[in-house]
Image (cartoon, rainbow, N blue to C red; front, side, top):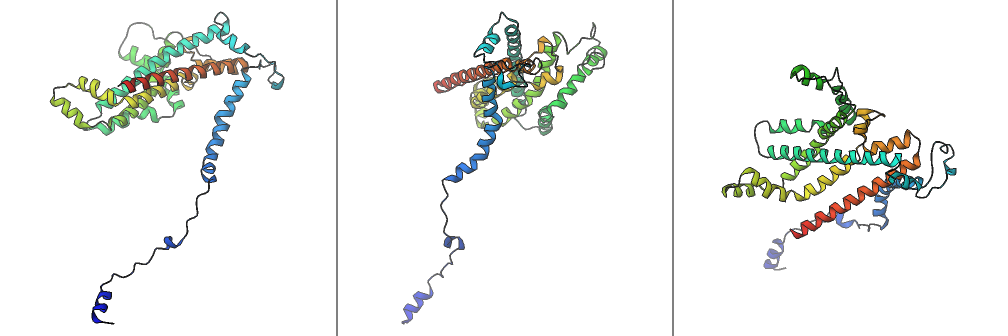
Length: 326
């Protein structure tokens, strides 16, 4: 071998050893693996949601009262009889259901409106950095972090007439004229119900809106400030349009949660709720488990489900059309 050939061979880079993973042949993923991974979730979804919902729809077509509860398979078939009684507003069942529906609509509008307003105000106020911002964020999220039952029970003690903190502050500290009112009975029960629901709901709106505002670039606000835009104009022309996707989902979720709220009236009033605080989910519970008329209660539940599906579908359809036009 010549000297030039030896020189060329000496300048060649050494061979890199192959990794062990290159020698191992990868087995193809079977077609059954994705279905196997989804099977537990689908099974639990069927057991927890789908099967009880189908069973509830089936019960709504039968006269399943306390007479047939021991032998429910022999309950008479009524067809749409339970639905007819529920929407017959001239009868006692239909009138009470309509009253509960109207109370729930007013309750939902107030709670969602005030919760979104407070959440938006808090998120905008804490968007910029300042001393103590982290402490205020943590403080605002305390109602959302507290256990629901413990928080509502605390509010229940606060709303007591003689020993509650609300009347003590209003009439003993501020010296308001008049007699201390009852907050958990009569017309004041609706006010107490709305206050507790807003206190419990608005931190969720604050959290979602605060997270959504992080995606809004600060350069847009700085450019608008150079052009002379005031804070309210920035909020109306920049914040609201850019937060539209977040608000679209947030308002729908808050509407569904509030309209279906059961824990707040149940813990606040007990089983004997006043008519002013008779939310429809609690009304259906009483119609099913206090009067033992599961057929009528199931029919009311199906009607509530259809109403929520209709409102959600119309809401999403309108919002999507507006977003396409924009």
